[in-house]
Length: 623
Image 1 (cartoon, one colour):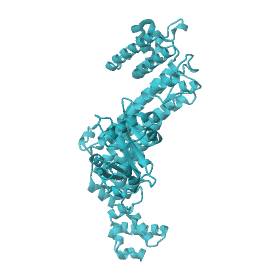
Image 2 (cartoon, one colour):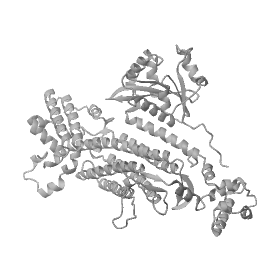
Image 3 (cartoon, one colour):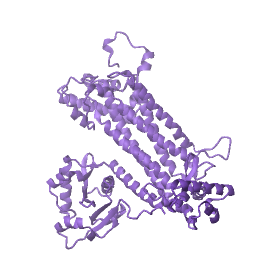
Image 4 (spheres, one colour):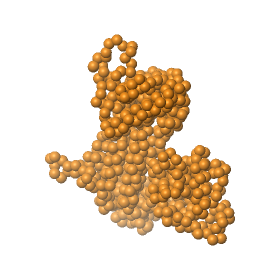
């Protein structure tokens, strides 16, 4: 069935139809077309265009169609409709007759396809977010497992300075963390609904577009109809994000391919992620990593194709925009699959600690440590650099390491060099010297790993529907606190106090209802406390309480808070989350604020625990 045949006297040619039709690929939008159509049917009823009975029939027909699509997702491609919009409408008319013809009143395929594509992309990015966090978790596990291992770091593919394997893995964690932030921003930027903008000038019906947007899960309705139907910024932004993230994965793959080579030999690939040669029996090929590296160009190509499609388009909708789908669908698939396979593969990489250490000790990678040693003797850096280079040249001529030069040989270059230089030239000393923030010293890498785990847990909490509280949550929060106050677990809090402090609260939702809350209270001294933690009865053991704590700890980290405390009877719960027992009498802020008001202040049975976000240990100074 055609949605536009009335103006035409002759049928379209088959060759044109094959070239024009998008159903062979846009059928994946079917579930989202159904959701948008259900919302539109309700909007039509609200505008008085269809009756309540007709609206019910339309929604019933759409839900029946959704069930069929769930069983057979490729059902539409068996027909010869032009696109998914006309296929859905034709199916409704087959089922409902004349009522089905009313659904498209006041809307256009132009606003509908933009809405469908946004809904599809929001859902797809949600799955990719899980995969992205899974890859971050895989890298964190890899860093923890190989925290003691050392490999040479490289510049210009030449050995430069030793680094910890964990430091290497955490570099990619940083990249993927930025990808995650960009993904969240991308979701926010695209969260305006085009539905109700019609073909380009808006709908002529009295449609409540804001209510329609909220029903479909958007933050708001788009404010300019011309822009809304022709906007594909969200496609470009998603493709740009995918391209950059794939580049990050590609760089990781390049490292792994090199580290697994015979020239390096620091990593060993497990059989589960390797292939062999059809000719050379000895070969074990890193095909997984080479494929991800190759697919990066494919995804980046989709971005360029979309930019070129858009660059010369006038307002508003043009059929060129049909080219947005295949590139977007494929890019999101390749990105998701690449993240998943990298996560899996990380668990099948072994680190040859001895090979890595041996390589890190070669190539005069401690020459910078020698220069730093000379600087500490009072030598200007440029002179120290020159003297260290001269000693490297001597060692090369002798075919030995820097630490194997005789003291007398070193003193011919600088007479102030003493026996303590040999300790400086040890591998561990070189690592330990990199003790400033961001360095590869063991203390710094351990602290960085803890910070990264804290951030990861906070991000993972958002997947459990933890979010910042809003004013509309006050009643639900008050109900939860009142319940646990009755159980003796919380101090009472008036609703007005909760409203005033709503910015300190986080909530967790299930089925779009608030089922848990907690708050991060910051004292005037900069100390922070997690308080008012409570879930609806019966929801214990699902990880919701931990998710709330992780979310608030992420906020504390963003606020540069150094220490978070908790006063609780559920001490073991917080110990499992990394909190350590502490002397609560040393928290004057808490004692002065709440303890004097507590009915149990003279017989307190709560445990004090604390979590240091900024490590307490003093970072060793460079010697």
